[in-house]
Image 1 (cartoon, rainbow, N blue to C red):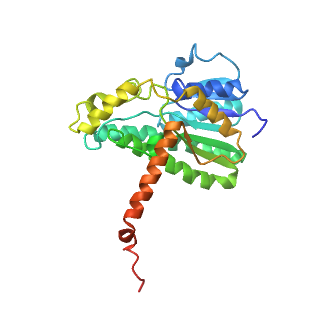
Image 2: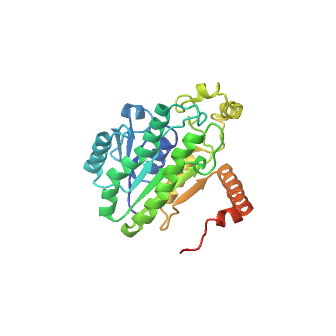
Image 3: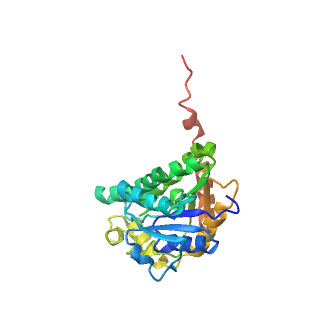
Length: 281
């Protein structure tokens, strides 16, 4: 898609990484469809232009998603880049979080990604070009106390994106799971995160300690959301983009530690791992 004016479809676009993605795409001359539950939230944030369309969309409601995609196609006739950014963190111990809270987190973070993809992918396959960027997280690969459920949702996004990349290759369509480390957004803020208040009263001391740390980290993360958005733009310019991309020095350090730990554990139990390889007979 080099040299073309791409059409972006960005979910959760009214703040944070989503909003910076809208701005970065417009600044390089592309066109953007920005979705939000409240399109009025873009007022004063994005200058009105024929290259920008704000649409109402509620995730994971399929009718709402289909209507938003139809509006995008009516306005611009195509969708070249899908950024599945909408989602939120759910913090608390694996035992103590309610079934309702867990299902809601999976509905938005996982089922929402799937629903938007299903609405957009037929367009990209017919075009025989396009790029799906799914926002995962370093938490998809590295987890700990208080982040188990959120990590599970992002691990699902990471794996489904890698499978999607393999499935879409024949159509000339790319898919990338982007896994940032800490980014200065409202991710840990009560306005975006859920479960934090209950987690501070957890029966698990590790969870309580983790929540205290997250409170200090809120809005003090090392990653710049504007630079994340610029990385998205660079991804769309790559002829052979990766199926997963880690962003941030903290993400790379955590990943290296995790990979080394997994290898060490596997090497420590090789005999047990190989013990199931019985002879066929």
